[in-house]
Length: 97
Length: 423
Image 1: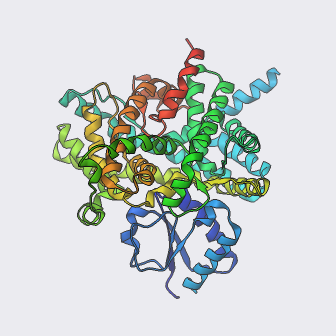
Image 2: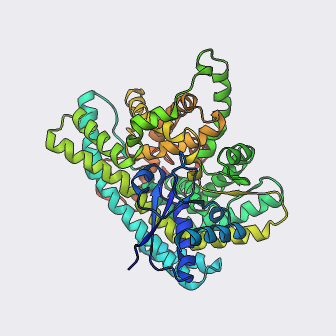
Image 3: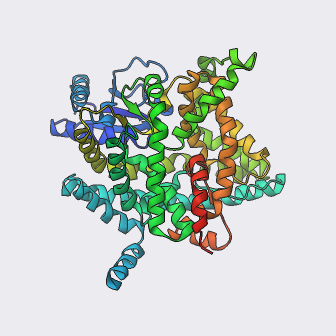
C-alpha cells in the first residue's frame, strides 16, 4: 500500500475556517476516488510539527513564512467563489496524484 | 395556544444536545442543504455541544480551586471562572438560536437593499457572537423575544462597523472583497484607528518595532497553545502554593483545556458547514451585481504580519495586567486563546508593527476585563438557564470570558436592556 497522503488545513485557531475547507475538499476528493488521504485540521501556530509529513498545506490564513512545502490557499471556500474552488481542488489533485 | 406553549417548554426541556440537532436539521432543510447533510450536520452540532459540556467540567475542576487558591494567597479578587469559548454552547444551544439565525439573514438582506451596509452576513459561524449576546439579554430580562431582538441588533451593528474597515483588513490579509464583521474583532479594529493615531504623536514610541524573526526563533514554542497552557498552569500552581505533584497536574489540565476546548468548538462548526454553504450560495446569488463584501471568520486575520509574534508577547502581559488591574475579577487563562484574534484585528491598522499592536491590544484589554467582570452575573444566569455548571453556580460560582463575556459592544448594548431586567 502506498503511503497515505496527508493534507493539512491550517487556520488561525483550528476551529472554523479550516473545518469548512476540509469538509468541502474532503468530499470532492472522495468523489474523485482519492481514498488514501488523511485530512488534518490544525492551528497555524502548530504547523512546524507537520512540515515533514504533509503532502499539501491548505492555508486558511497567511502562514508566517514560506515553508517550502506544496501550499494552496483555501480562501475560495470561505467566500463561496466556485471558480476559485475548482482551481484549488485541481492544484491539490496535482500535488497528491 | 396552551398546547403550543406546552410543546415548546417540553422541547426546550430536552436540553441543548437534543434540541439543537433538531433545530439545525430543520434549518438545513429550509436552506436546501439536503436531508442527509442536514441530518449529519444536526447530529454533529449536538456532539460538539456535548463535548463542550465535558470540557466545562475540566475547567471548573481544575481552574476554580487553582484561581481561588492563587487569589487567596496573593490577596487578589480573581473570583470568576474563565470559561472562554464554552460560550459557544450557550450560543448554539439557547432557545432563541433559530430566531437570531433567521432574523439576521432577513435584516441583513433589508440593510443591503437599503444600502445601510455592504457586508453580507455569510459567515454563519460568527453568528455565535450575536447568539451569545442574545442569550445574555434573555438571561437578563427573562424574555426570549427581547433576547432574539438583541442578538439580531448586535450582528446588524457589527456589519455597519465592519464596512469602513473592510478594505484595510482585506488588503492586509491578501483577501480582496472580504469583511470581518464579527465582534470583538470589528470593535478592536475600529478602536485601533484612533489609538494608532495617538501613538503617531508620541516621540520614540512611534519609531520603534520589534523583530518578528527574533521573537519567533526564541519564543515560538510559547505560541503553541498546548505548551503555553502547560507552562502557565504550572506557574499558576506554583503561585497558588501547590505542591509539586499538583503543580504538574495543573499544568497538564490547563494544556488539556487549551487544546480540547477549540477542538470541541470545531465539532460544532463542522456540523454547521452544510448550512453555511447554503447561506453563502443563497446570498451570493441574491446580491449579484451589487458592491458587497463577503463576511469571513475573524480567524483569517491570524496569519497577518506580526500577529503571532505580538500574541506571544501578549500572553504573559495579559495575565499580569489582569492580576494588577484594580476591581477586575477575571484571570484569563482559557481565554488567552482569544489574544491572537485581538492582535489579528489590530495588526492591519498598525501595518503589522509588533510594538504598536501589543500596546493597543493591552490598552483595549483594560475595558474588556471590566466588561467581563460587570457582565459576570448575567453570563452566569445564562449558564444556569442552560443547565450548565448547575451545582457550582448554586454554590455561588460565577463565570466570565474575554471574548463574548468581555465584548465591548456587548458591554454598551446591554445597558438599554437593563431597563427590562427581571426583579
